[in-house]
Length: 166
Image (cartoon, rainbow, N blue to C red; front, side, top):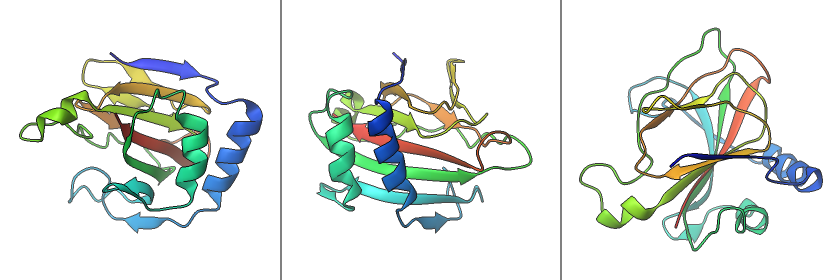
């Protein structure tokens, strides 16, 4: 089941989260989904492999542990993509729980939190499309096939916090 919630954080909380995320260092990658897709993006890892990777995790935990009904983090990262000349489908994928992965991943959830407005939605294989709207949270089972779409309108960057958790 895919759920969408708007205005997840109050304006003060949203402003604090956004402000701190804009100050972070990012690593540039030459791929977004597949190793050879040649879609540039910037990533900041906050939590991975059972340990915090960034001080931003504490702030994110404070604001999102209740809205996510969090038991434990698995991975938290911030993805930044740049505005392009045409909308590009980034490729179908699941965050975790795909064929051959550990069976417990089937119980994992993914949530995407959008920090700005763009025309780059998240699309799902079942036809559902969720627009990239500031302060919106979309939640779905981690094994759900989905893709981001590059944007051509709105802010110069598309900033999304990707939460994988139990």
